[in-house]
Image 1: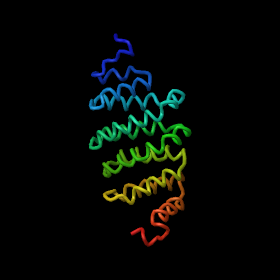
Image 2 (image 1 turned 30 degrees about the vertical axis):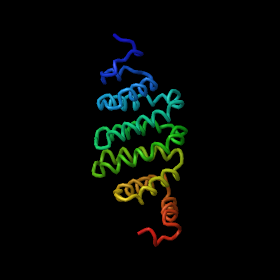
Image 3 (image 1 turned 90 degrees about the vertical axis):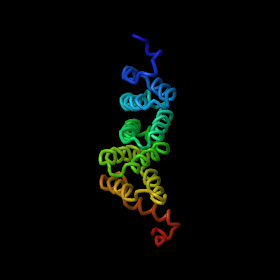
Image 4 (image 1 turned 180 degrees about the vertical axis):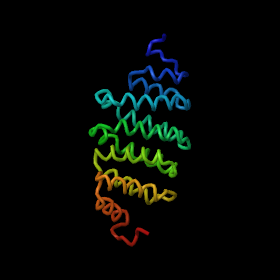
Length: 192
């Protein structure tokens, strides 16, 4: 049996034996175009991010690796689900969520917008938004509202997610309204 430091990078199944986030990150970066390996690494991140002590010093690198994998597989629904789930696992701890939110929010939003009809992905995205909101719900609301002004954005997807966050008392409706007014340059008639 090979040592864990000499992992054959072509075998995605070997990722299950890795017990270090640093090794998973190294593996993800060494084989960026190996889709099976990227998926296995996303699953490993979900599993290994439960060890918050090990995660904290690597959390920005982990989010960056997830973001790169998600960007390369933007049209792959399964990969997007896995990336959002991995991000959600990383953001489980309040202090980590606060640190990674600026990098993680666009990844979750882009995944949700890429597959607006997929209920499972939308549910995973809402869970990720809720966890990221631990680090500051205003930042989550601001980022989501900012995306509403981007052409081609599926408006209803973000509105539904914001509504769920409000219904679950993760953010307040007035925060959403405040951000919409800022987006309209202080003139609500500009929102159309």
